Length: 367
Ligand SMILES: Nc1ncnc2c1ncn2[C@@H]1O[C@H](COP(=O)(O)OP(=O)(O)OP(=O)(O)O)[C@@H](O)[C@H]1O
Ligand SMILES: [Mg+2]
Image (cartoon, rainbow, N blue to C red; front, top):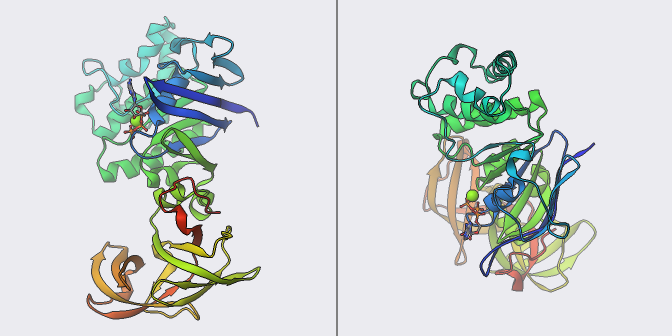
């Protein structure tokens, strides 16, 4: 498989602030690849460097085998000569132009012939399921349809790659979910590689073939959604993707299959051996809410807690529990409703281990 975008040692500073800190990643052909991380971590800056809207300080960027930026070779191909389509958060569609002319706009800029324009715009309209709407003005469209027009405009020039920066964040929750599926479908149908930026971990998990998790200008892990969730490389990834409960404890013994811990409050837990077991005796046990079973004993791994708060979430129920001064968050199926104030047993099915000194260290190893 070919590489679509290759980024090596990319660094971008604004004054004394390093927004992007020597990052590396390579996108495969046909891949839906997401950069995900909290606000200010450098996602947009990375995308703007790939687009050529920002000039990096160091590193190299290749698009489909062509070097478009290389600091040491003084290569910096201007944006309009990079084969990319872009949609940003505040996608601007021209209000005075019809859907057809909005989508045709990039072709007109390139002086494409009328027949060629018609063929290509027609194809894009069909792909977007908007054949009937070509004559409409954007004001006569829903938010999701306007978004599709912006996407159509990015696609019409048949770029080598699409760069999308939080393109769904202006849409309401329901529409956003719908557009996620639409985008994924369009990507499957066209095979066009997408470099997608979002701070929404669920969006990234749902849409991506692979995800790069970023924090403070650095990439912590590049892997498939399942791998990112199941085997987070660092504490930051564990925290950022999904949620997690922490309990201090000490390792009593470990075998090839299990580890036995004494956690704060004195309970002893025997759990499946996680991918990483620190050398230190003092550890932090990290458990995902769905790996705690409420009101059900797991042999040898029970905590006794009190239900403080219960939130009904429709398909799930979330509980805040108090265990020996620690707050725990547990999710269960909705048919196991337990009243607030109850004393319950919590079974722990599995967890991750960190060195106990690693609480503040987002780069601390997890698996
Ligand atoms: N033109 C600029 N001048 C100075 N600092 C900038 C500039 N653009 C971005 N920054 C800073 O660089 C860092 C990274 O910004 P960036 O926009 O890449 O973050 P982001 O991950 O896209 O965040 P968000 O999720 O909020 O969009 C931030 O600290 C930001 O303030
Ligand atoms: Mg941004």
